[in-house]
Image (tube, rainbow, N blue to C red; front, side):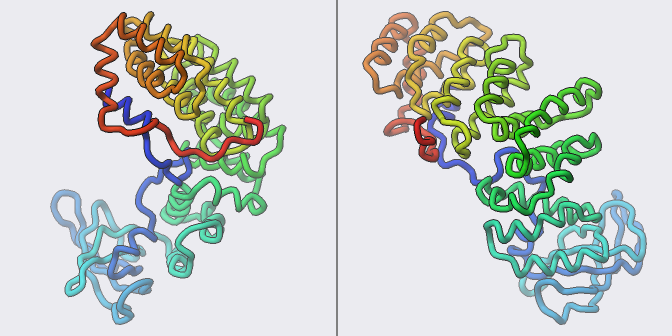
Length: 380
C-alpha cells in the first residue's frame, strides 16, 4: 500500500491524451502502421466452422496499404459469428513472406474513402484531428468509433485548436441524448468547454436532472464538471466545491469526479488560478474518508497551508480511513517548511511503525515528489 501511494506522489510525465476519454481499441492508423497490408474485401461465400467461427472466401476490392497486386485476390479467413455473403470487411495483414490476416471487421462500402484518407494525414496535431471531426457523425459504427479513438488519444491543446470548427448545437444534443454512450458524452463535454457559452455551464444541472429521472443515464461527471468550470470560471467552481467537495453527504463517485476535474484544470488548463483550485481541494480534508485522494495533489502543487490539518488526519485516523496515514507522512516529508518536520516528529512519536513504513516507500526516490505541470496562471 505504501509503495503504491509513493508512486502516486511521484508520478512521471502526464499522458498527453484527453484526460476524460479512453480509447476503446487501437486506432486503424495504429494497426496500419504495424501491418504489412491493409485491404477491403467482399465476402463471396461462407461455410460454418466449429466454436462459432465462419470460414469465408473474400475477394479484395481495395488495397489501402501493401502490394497493389493484392487487388482482386481471394483470401480465406475465419470470422467469429454469423457472416452473410456480400458483406464488406476491413482486414489488416502481418508478415513479409506469408501474410497472416487479423480478424476481419465488417464495414460499409463507403468506408474506403475514410481508410484512404488516413494514409495522407500528419502523425499528430490539430490538422490530423480536423480530418476525424466530420467522421464522428459517420453512419458506419466502425468508422465513427475509430474517429472517436483518435480524439481519445489527442491532447486537450490539440482539441482546443478546433474550437472554431465545432458545432455547438450538435454537441449539446449529443450530451443530452440518452442513447449516446458515456465515452462519447465525455468527449462532447470536452468539445463544449471549447465552443460553449457561459450559459452552457448550466447543462451540468440539466444532465443531473436527466440522471435523477433515468438511473441509466451517466452524465460523465468528471468531464461535465470540468466543462462547467471552464465555461463558468470561479463562480462555477464555488458551486462545485460546496456541492461536491465540502459537502459530507455528496456521493463518493461525484466527489471523486469533481476532484479529477479540478486536478485536470490545475495541470492542463489555465482557466482558474491553481492557488484557487488548490483551495477547493483543501475542502476535502474535512472528509477523512476521502482526504487521501487530494493530499498528493496538494503536495504536487506545493500547497503547504494544510500541514496541521493533515497531521491531525494522521493522528485521528480510524480503521475506516487508515490509508490517509501514509499519504500524510509523504506530504510532510515533501514539504520543505520547518513546521512540517516538527509535525512529522510528533507523528513519529505517536506511531513510529507507520511513519517508518511510509518513509521506506520513498527509498528509491531522489528529490521532491512532483508531477510536471504547466506554470501557474499569473497571480496564482
